[in-house]
Image 1 (cartoon, helix red, strand yellow):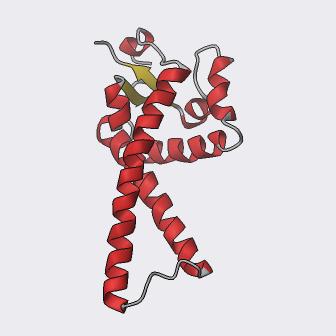
Image 2 (image 1 turned 90 degrees about the vertical axis):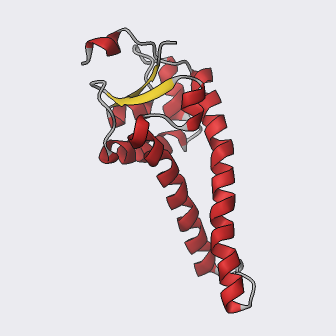
Length: 150
């Protein structure tokens, strides 16, 4: 473990939720742009409205939005260890040894975060009982969120 990592603070649950809320607001805007970039050209080219009621089109649209959402988080995590919400609250995502995330690490964290938070946020609430205050997905993905010094 990086010696500097031992002296950093692990952010509490409210700080994590504040950063997540900020990121979700930003992600909502990104998804609005992504949907517009998909539907407007479709309607312009075909001359018909996007078929929202067809099962295959709905599935494709959902897959597209999930992909955009995943790219949003993994891009920021790999590029600098911070999303815009994390930067606001001076949080950084690193590997368990303190080194920057690689694309595989970011994808692993994203998958574990979704799986751990889906059942009523159990993976997040785990930090309240963990001796190092890590979430379930921190442990499973071998990453950790740290609070940077001012």
